[in-house]
Amino acid sequence: MAAAQRKNTQLDEQAHSTSSSIIAADKVEGTNVYNRAGDKLGSVDHVMIDKQSGKVCYAIMSFGGFLGIGESYHPLPWQKLDYDRSKGGFVVDLDKKQLEGAPYYKSGFDWTPDYGRKVDQYYGVPTYWP
Image 1 (cartoon, rainbow, N blue to C red):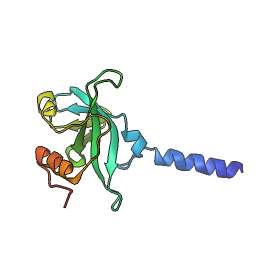
Image 2: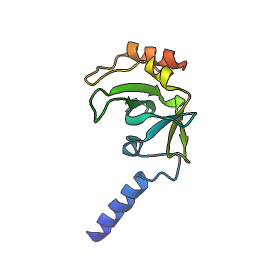
Image 3: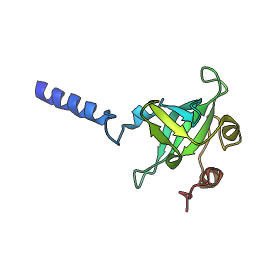
Image 4: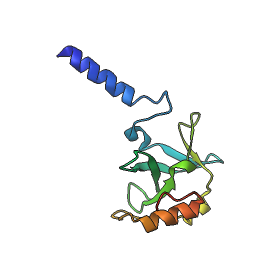
């Protein structure tokens, strides 16, 4: 029994390791997002993953609010984020003004392909949606 527990602990540590190019989804959640000037824009609330391919499509960044009140959620196409080891967070080519004009939603939102296309168009990336 002790050997099985050690093995599970080792597997868990490997799954949460950030020393390689892969990372556990729960480690991404809460990671800060900065602009190129180094200003903190928000943090990753959660990621959206394609059920078929397993590819991460969007990082949903929480922005604004206080203690979760008045917070808005900004979907950022995954390819727009660059991980910066020195910051321990993601960097995007956006300033606060651009972010304020970006597609966002409040809690209780149902994602649709049309909304996804709107997000992709705003950020100038090839759309994920057919």
